[in-house]
Length: 386
Ligand SMILES: Cc1cc2nc3c(=O)[nH]c(=O)nc-3n(C[C@H](O)[C@H](O)[C@H](O)COP(=O)(O)OP(=O)(O)OC[C@H]3O[C@@H](n4cnc5c(N)ncnc54)[C@H](O)[C@@H]3O)c2cc1C
Image (tube, rainbow, N blue to C red; front, side, top):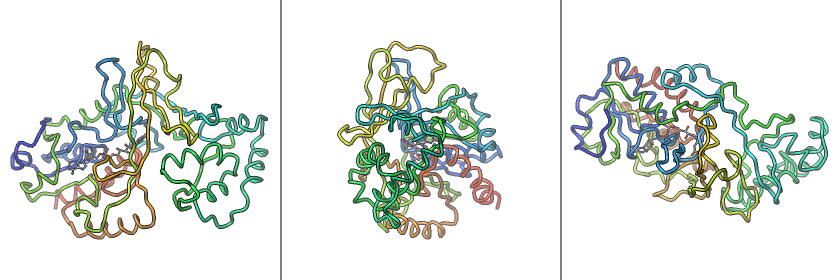
């Protein structure tokens, strides 16, 4: 059952054995498990839809499926997660490929032998390419900033062409002023494999992501209330276990300070025909304001031809208090602050903190689902059966 709006805190939670805050993959996975075992679950989300950041909808004007919070591609090595999710969806094979425009030329991403060969203008074997990167990567045995770290990982030429401008746009800061810890690795593939992901399973849900959530939450044991914020509703909540997938700092009134996030602004445009001929084009140059353009119909080629096309230009920036938090910044000060919040969370014996916001971690969808499967077994179920 799905309801919209705050009908009064008491009726929201009437008869619930478990409250789940957040109808994204973490919350929906836990709710589905609890309902299947006969527990009554109240799921609330402050947004007016289920699905969290994986929410998709069909644009009424063009008929194209839009990923509202940025393109989502399902990829994993976990057979367990695939088996679980396959209860709620069929799949269509989809191997994601990304291109980048740099200096007026186009290259495949992540950096691979084709990128290096196109960039240098000569065909290189894996051994030659490794030697070429190593030759340009010296000089920074103890990198003092992101720029030096990146150069030590992939050499100056590739850094200058593909990383410098893109990173500057992502962080609104020159990479030489960013701490080295922001990156741990920069992938370079010494093969011509230009798939964006190398996981065993790479596919898209046949009917979009939202259809998965509708099936996961369809049990008569689950009541979904949309447009309801936990912090307005919790006063009337009964004393039952809570799974909280919102921001952990907000749960504690930001009493240790705010955790840092980057957000993304999406500018949607409708065009005739095919805009860019691929699903994602990155823009590596600093003088192009957007970081990438996603063209949604290319994420579902099996749906056939559309007359029009919908694209989203993405602009990255630091998240303010009212912005959607997307990528944890995770500097040393954030990690220390998060450790403090984790210690506070450990004192909340009937609340399980989960998902990307509740644990201040970037999680892919399969990781959020995997974490929820573990949390159900180890934390939530024991609370309900105690
Ligand atoms: C731009 C972008 C692109 C991505 N692309 C991919 C991809 O290609 N492949 C992939 O596997 N993953 C991708 N991800 C990651 C994916 O979005 C996450 O794995 C997934 O959203 C995690 O699910 P979750 O349940 O932890 O969080 P969410 O999906 O964020 O769900 C949390 C929910 O809690 C709700 N909530 C928060 N606070 C409250 C409150 N106070 N009261 C009520 N409700 C509240 C929110 O409204 C939200 O709906 C991408 C993420 C971003 C940002």
